[in-house]
Length: 302
Ligand SMILES: [Zn+2]
Image 1 (cartoon, rainbow, N blue to C red):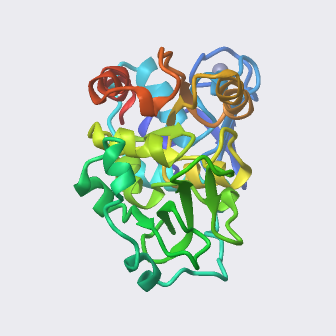
Image 2: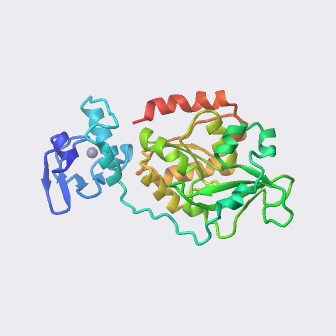
Image 3: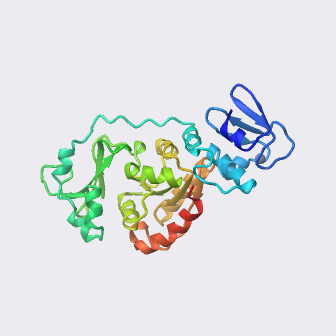
């Protein structure tokens, strides 16, 4: 028997692939208004669109039913791990990168980067993220601060991105063959936090993620740009994300991209888009970041 059906005593008919019945979220009397897929826990309310408010995934349904029945929603209520895993209606496959960067290359960098130390990032943080300067004239990343990008399991360095020390373009140069569609910066360290909170922070780049880390907030991910790609969406799903806090840059492109991400994915995740009055996350102090993020984490964490 399905755990959600069982736990909430849903009055549904069982078919080969779905359960169907009166929508248990808004009640009503249409006996075909609600469907719940057995395998994925994907659900839908055809009459009132209740899923739009809570999200199509199993955790969304559990949250909706808890709210309705005045049951406090806890992460481990009915082994929601299984529900979270099942809610991956998409299969996410880690991109197979032909060009894994040997760790010995990273070890040739001057870590911690002096340039990033000057910008206020703590040495310990830069060491953890292996952020270092390259002064080797023969290298692609000469006179840049190099930031390795790991796979989500923190096994291989699949790419690197590097910020110029001068005013060169591009400001951030990626290693050859890097496809941002397959990566979210910091997914390898943030994965366990996101799994336990259900909350992920989406931001544009490396500097923003490091600013969150400096503020002691460990569930942020960098898009390597302002828009969210299809595979990044699947990766977020795969990490067990139910709520997304969007902190793209506070300019027209950043705000537009935030609105686009919400519009395209409102059935999959809860969204919070906090307003802040600086240009980007990097300009906020740690205490400003904490005062924006902590209340949201408190409210939406599983
Ligand atoms: Zn409904």
